[in-house]
Amino acid sequence: MSLKGRIEELNRRHAKLDDQINEEQKRPAADEVAIKRLKQRKLRIKEEMGMLRAS
Image 1 (cartoon, rainbow, N blue to C red):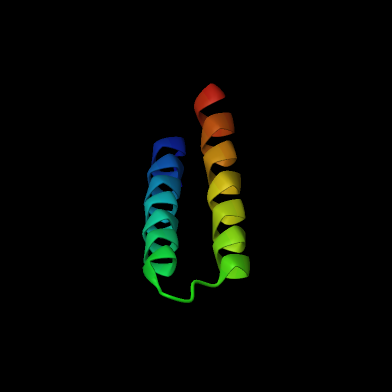
Image 2 (cartoon, rainbow, N blue to C red):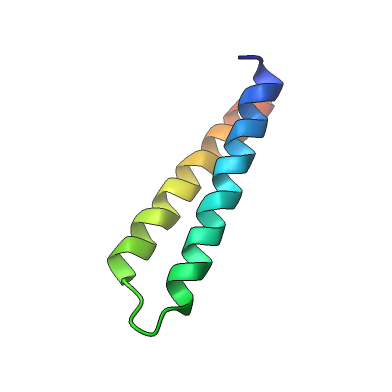
């Protein structure tokens, strides 16, 4: 996979995680542990995108 393709894939995954976080937060009894895990995954993806863009 090309660098551009990898970044695009990471962008899609980042956006999907954002949607999942928003949906979980809308629930009356939101699972805070699940939200925290999703946010951590989102942050790792953001960091990876930053490293790829810097290279």
